[in-house]
Structure formats: structure tokens, C-alpha cells
Amino acid sequence: MSDLLERLRGRGWRLTSQRRVVAEVLDGDHVHLTADEVHARAVRRLPEISRATVYNALGELVALGEVAEVATDGRAKRYDPNAHQPHQHLVCSGCGLIRDVHPDGDPLAVLPAAERFGFTVSEVEITYRGLCPACA
Image (cartoon, rainbow, N blue to C red; front, side, top):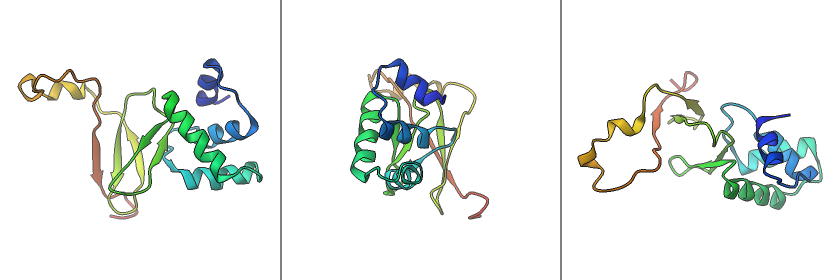
């Protein structure tokens, strides 16, 4: 069973055949699919699944905190199932490919206290941009 499916079962999320297929499509490292890509892959596994069902399932997964929405440069939102693993993203400025990266150290440590302006920082999002080997 996939990590995402295991987490969803542990949370008591009712796994209908449609929800299960959406979760299976999202499972894996470096998965950052758009809703349309999730739907296209889900249809291959379950031909009767509707686009609305996929969008609803994605919305529920985001609300549960099991999947994160990733938006880059005005492109379509992508869905990241690695919401429980601290990581940052490396994004290709050419084709939009997204890879998870895990730099060493605490990203919050590089923000000096004087630059926090009294904020209590709860999370950090860092995006590295460049060109992937195919676009370079």
C-alpha cells in the first residue's frame, strides 16, 4: 500500500474506488501533477471517473493537509503528495518540471531575528529556479 493511502486509511478517510484511484495516481516521490494530469491518469485506471470527482478529491486531500498545492509562475496548480516531508522545490523555468529537494540545515536559521519583524514564523517555502537538463 502506498504511503498516501496508508495515511488516508489511518485518518479514516472513506476510500471509494474514485478516491483510491486519485490517491494512487498521486503516490510517489517528485509527483507534482496538475488536476488535469491527475484526471487523465485516473481515467486510464477507472474510465468512468469524472473531472469533477477528481477536483473534489484533490480539494479534500488539500483540506486534510495530506496533499499540498504548489503554484509556480502563473502555471496551473500542481498537487504534491509529500506534504508531510519537509522539502523545497526546484522548478525549471522552461518546461515547469518540479523536483523535490532536501537541502541540509534549517531554512529558518538564515532569516535573522531582525528581519522577522516580530513575526512568529511557522513555515518556510523556498523555490529554486533554473533550467532542467532537457531545457538547458
